[in-house]
Length: 283
Image (cartoon, rainbow, N blue to C red; front, side, top):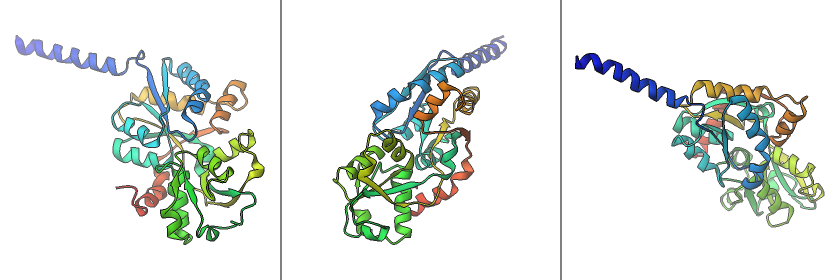
C-alpha cells in the first residue's frame, strides 16, 4: 500500500517542480554587458524591455552591471535567464555555464574594432603606437580588448604598448579619454563610435580613426542552459520580429545599433575561441 502511494506522490512532486519552473508569473531576468554607461543604457533599453514583456507574456526585469564579468557570473549562478554578451564573454559563458546562442544583429557577423587618436595626432598606423599611451575598454571586451590586442600582436606592435595599456572599463570611456587628450590612442567598438559621434556626444572633428580591424563575430543574445525552451524561443522570436519599418520597433533597433536580427550559431565563434586561447585568456 505504501509503495502504491509513493508513485503518485512522486509524480505530484515532479509536476509541481515542473510547473514552478515554467511559471509565467516568474519574471524573465535579462542582463547586458555594459558597453556604455549602465544607467543611461538601462533607460535606453526600456522600450526593449516592454517589447519582450509583450512577446513573452510576462514581467521582464533588466539589470546592467558595471562590468562584463558580472554578467558571466550571473549566468554561471543561474541568476540571469537572458543575456547580451560580447563574443568573448559568450565564449566564456558557453564554456562555464553552457549558455545557448539565440540571435545577433546582422552587423555582428562582420564586426570591427576601431583604433582612434586625436585629429591632429601624428599617429597614422599601428607602428606609430611605439612609445605612446594606449587604452582598451573592459578587460573582457571582445571589440575593446581581445581582438584589438590580437591584431596588435599579429602586426608586431611594440609589446610595451600593450603591457602598459590602461583599461577604461567601457567603449564610451575610451572614446572620451582619447577625445579629451588624456590618452594618445585607443580601441573600441565601431557601433559605439558611430552612435556617439552621430548623436553629437563626441565632436567627430576631435578624433580620427587610423586603423580598422579585419571582421570578426561579436555580440550575441544568449539563454541560460536551464531556461524553459519555450521562453528561450519566445525571446528569440521577439528579436527576429523587430521590423525597421515599424516606428516602435525602429526605436528599439536604433537603441541597439541594429538594422535587423538574425539567428546566432555557436560554431561561428571558433576563430574567436582560438584568439582567446592564444592570448591566454580562456582556460
